[in-house]
Image 1: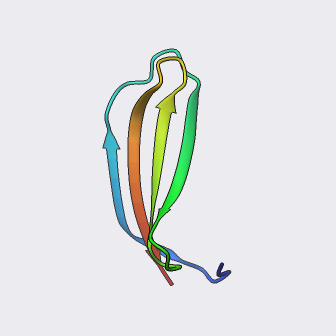
Image 2 (image 1 turned 90 degrees about the vertical axis):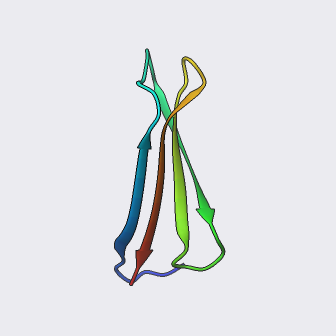
Length: 61
């Protein structure tokens, strides 16, 4: 891991469905092995099990 500042240079947000009753749960996973590769975040409505939002981001020093 690195402790230097990073700046988001790529950001892709996709709103797929409206959240119903909630709550919303988040999960993140790295999309690569390098320290500056992207990350994928999913938001899931726990009451329906449906993914509501997908986010992809990449940061550089």
